Image 1 (spheres, rainbow, N blue to C red):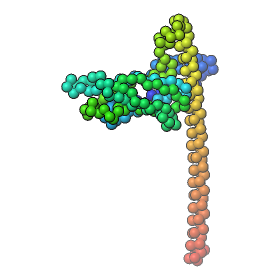
Image 2: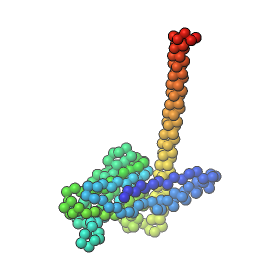
Image 3: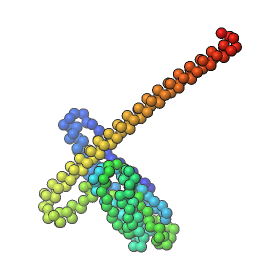
Image 4: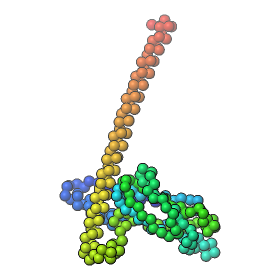
Length: 235
């Protein structure tokens, strides 16, 4: 099972002030549900990868736990501590920003430095497969992006914030995340426009080249036919 986590695209809304308010509300609603909780199954040598579109300078936290299939009970049970998971994260430029071995249950964290599609891959360690017994491993994965990755209860206890101060901090971080998402959308739009212009330019030059080839073939055919008729003394 592979899941691609999408990015909300907010298109222009008619009007100026109203459009800005509606875009902000849509982003707030989307950010309120940003994250992904799922489970999947992997075999002994299988790797599962997920694509997450992330703005730059955004923190991502992933929590996972594993379960092994018990053939006698015919159900999944918590995996033994000896079974580990290897987590690898690559940025849009295919650079590895995280590669680490974890236990059967754990948490990984990374911060994006380049906007775009990040690849998150997980696979079990290959030295403990005697515990696997050829069965399937179930992995529960929860990915939180941006300000949703923050534990505000822990922040409030650490900084001794009141409920109002904590709420203000949440709103400030939400606004910062919205700005990052808007910058990311502008970056995607600019990239798409550059790709479209490049494609249009290539199509134009290819059309010109085809026209020149057709003209050259036509001229060559006319000269060849003229020389053929002259040789046969038909003209």
